[in-house]
Structure formats: C-alpha cells, structure tokens
Figure 1 (cartoon, protein in one colour):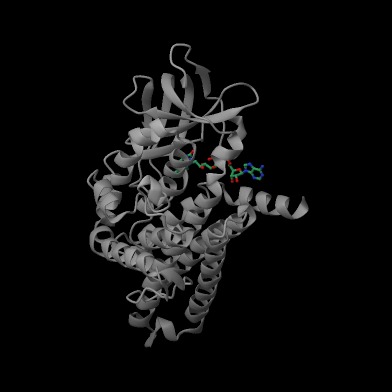
Figure 2 (cartoon, protein in one colour):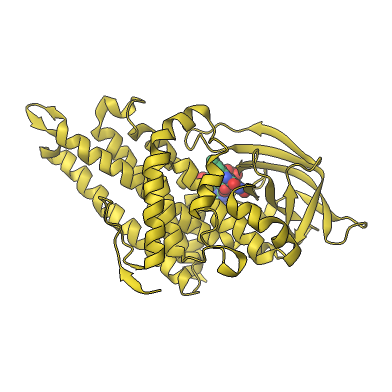
Length: 387
Ligand SMILES: Cc1cc2nc3c(=O)[nH]c(=O)nc-3n(C[C@H](O)[C@H](O)[C@H](O)COP(=O)(O)OP(=O)(O)OC[C@H]3O[C@@H](n4cnc5c(N)ncnc54)[C@H](O)[C@@H]3O)c2cc1C
C-alpha cells in the first residue's frame, strides 16, 4: 500500500491525521458517508427510543467498523490505531452513543477475544462478531467495583466436568450493550488474589437481566445491570493486568469520541453565531463570543494532537498508559467545555431539544466517566511521573 498525505477532503474540520494508507483513507471516507447519511439523521430518533435498531450491527459489519483492529489473519481489517480513532471520531460527530459502543467493541471486547481466545473460541465467535450477526459487551464494573476495579466480587469456580469452563456468580453494572449482547467478556475472580476473563453467552440460563440503566447522555446505548448465577463461562486465560490493558487503547477511543462530540458542537455554534443577530450585530461579531470560539478551537486542536500522539505511539508498539490518559482526560474535559460554550452561544435555543447542541452537551459527560473517570486518569499520569 502506498502512503498518501490525506486529510479527509469533504470534512470542514481539520484532522490532525495526515499519514494514512490509501486503503485506510478510503475506508474512513466510507465511514464518513455512512455516518452523515445513515446515522446523523437518526440520532434523535434513537435517543428517544433509548435503543439502536438491531439492524445497525450488520450494517456496521458490512463497512468493516466492527473489526477495525482485528488482524487480517483473523479476518479483520488490520488497520492502525490512528484509523480506529478517526473512525470513532467520525461516528461521534453523528451519534456519540454508537461511537461509544464501537470504541468498546473494537478496543476492548473484540480485541480481547482475538488475543486471549484459543483457536476453538476464535473459530466459534470471530466471524459472527465481525459481521455483526452477534454483538458484544465487556463487563468489568460492579455495584461495589467501579474505579477500584480490582475489587470485583464476581467469582468463577472451575467446572470439574468441563475443562476450561467455570461457573460464574456475581453482579455487573453499567455494561454497554449488556442487555443485547450475544457474547459478554466477563472479568471475574478465581480466588482472593487472582482475576481473569471469561466468555459468557447471554442465552446461557445463568445470565439474568436485572435492569436497564437510563443515563442522562448516550441514552440510545443499552446500558444495563445483570446478575450471573452459576453461568457457564469459557476461560480465556490471562491475568487481570492483561485483561484491563485493553483500556489504554480504549481510552484513546474515548478521547476520539470526545473530540468528535466537541467538533460537532463547535461547528454548530460557529454556524449559529454567523446567523443570529442581536443589538443589530451578528453574535460572531461580538468579542465575548469570539473568545469562546477561539478558546474552543485551540483546545480542540490540542485534543486532536494528544489523541493522534497516543494512537501513533500505539501503532509503533510503544507503551501508552500515560499518553492514553493525557488524550482521554484532556479531550473529554475539552468536550465538556466546548459543548457548554456551544450551548451558551445558542442561548435559549441551546436548551431546546429542536437543536442538537443540548444532546451533545449531555453526551459529552460520559467521556469524563467511562473507561476510568478523570480523577483516575490524573492518578495514572501522576503515578507514571512519580514512579
Ligand atoms: C454510560 C456508561 C457506560 C459504561 N459502560 C461500561 C462497560 O461497557 N463495561 C464496564 O465494565 N463498565 C462500564 N461503565 C462503568 C464505568 O467504567 C464506571 O462508571 C467508571 O469506571 C466509574 O466507576 P463508578 O461509576 O463506580 O464510580 P466510582 O468509582 O464510585 O467513583 C465516583 C467518583 O469518585 C472518584 N474516585 C474514585 N476513586 C478515586 C480515587 N482513588 N481518587 C480520586 N477520585 C476517586 C471517581 O473519579 C468519581 O468521580 C459504564 C458507565 C457508564 C456511565
């Protein structure tokens, strides 16, 4: 593949991504078209329904959005982390809830199955998941184990009749796609010291749906709590650290999601400020509005560079714990500031559901919480500096 210097031409915003393979650039162009034609026009409808239509998954599968990071040997696209982040950013501009699902799917659950699944497991699940025939979830969080993830109390005990299989008992909470997923990667404890991961099919009689958790943003996403009662779990041997190491790349995905949300809100605010007049002047001619636009543009640019840097280091195979936290923390706090300013520029209309900006303002909040809240990102950064 030849290298091309490419900035997605049809987009109005500038992308920090410049070194894309031609095939990856063409893929992202298809993603952009899809998000603009098939996702953005539906985003309100899905939010109001608190659900995506299930037909969305095979559509995403057809474009390749469900297997961006999976190697070609395993039937994936084998694209770079930079391309993954770009795809998530584009999706977030159209529907942040779907972007969040795709970020977790590609970076956490599917990546786990590829890396720690054995041949039998990969053969059983990979094709169905890559096509969207089956959907995925990744379940770490519990009622008493959030930021303190090591405190997981879901227990796994070996099934003496079936080597490699365990019985799982416990409760999971805030699991994205957890009520719809056919296959769930469950992090569980095997003894007081050791945690690892298991594949649990939702059709399993041990899976008990508990509650749909309706959230203030990303409301179309199927966020749920469920219990496991003697559920069959197929072991994917790995340590706890290995299982949660996917969160580093996942955090870049949430950074990219935050960037997409903020870019969309920024574009809407700039456009609005050029047309709305008060006191005989356009809003964009007023200095306090210009200050909001300037600060947002600058913070967006810094977010782009941090996400790009983290993804670039990941593509080089270098450690990214600190850089992923930089990107997630800065981009998600930026998204909250930029959407807030964008809403402010819209005035009363900013709070009105006829205007998309209020939805983006609500959706941005998840980025400061999911995959490690901002306080935890600061702990990661400080720890890596003070070690
Ligand atoms: C919409 C949504 C989707 C989600 N999807 C998934 C999913 O698919 N899979 C999954 O496993 N989880 C998922 N989560 C859970 C998410 O990762 C957790 O909510 C997050 O890690 C925070 O945990 P908590 O909610 O228990 O908050 P807590 O851990 O109780 O934290 C509460 C507050 O205290 C702060 N805090 C905690 N510990 C410290 C500390 N040591 N120092 C300083 N401050 C601290 C936190 O930063 C936060 O501000 C999702 C959450 C949401 C809202």
